[in-house]
Image (cartoon, rainbow, N blue to C red; front, side):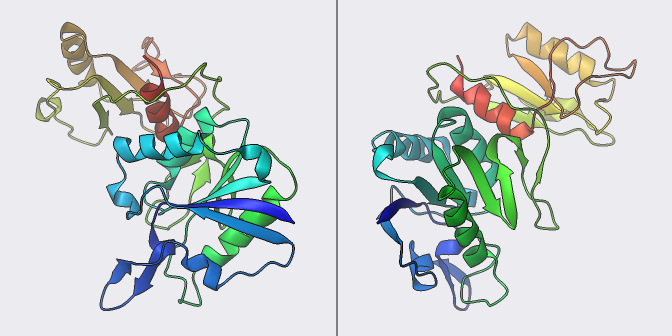
Length: 264
């Protein structure tokens, strides 16, 4: 009998519908899927709605996965909420790149006949049984975790960027990372960097930023706070940003954030 380990962490896939949607059944998925040729083991390091994910919970998940005997299983499925799915996927994709792990979420509670959670789980099982290694996300289709961008208002994820370089001996460091997204009229005086260990600043789709960012970068440099731009583009071709030498190219914000936590 082929075996798959299912790790619960919470999320909508573990919720039930009442007056409100509430977290109640970590392995509710087993009520909806049956396989004659696959045996599932289960583990629950913690159980939260994914908007409440934090670095300590990430450490708990990674610590648990480091205890798993992957030789016993065809692969591992992680049940997760969709809100921070891409962030957790990027983190695990950098650490467990040589394992077979798929993160699965659901857009609605499973008793809703239009929910995608059951199909996402089934896709994960089928893909694991092909013997492919790597960390993926199953949400309407499969995504390479380190290249996945969080879903927007349309509830769809998408892939951008390159495959990142492997981090040697990755370890989560508890850093206070300030993430900034540009917008019209942005006022950098609103951002307090006194407790920041790093700033990650996304760019507009053309790999550009408002010129007012230059003074803010200088302020970060004076306070010894590392500052990086993040873009999925492979180059910065406009004059306004062509001279920046602190751009992380070909990356999602989620993967840049994960790699920042995993390096000194």
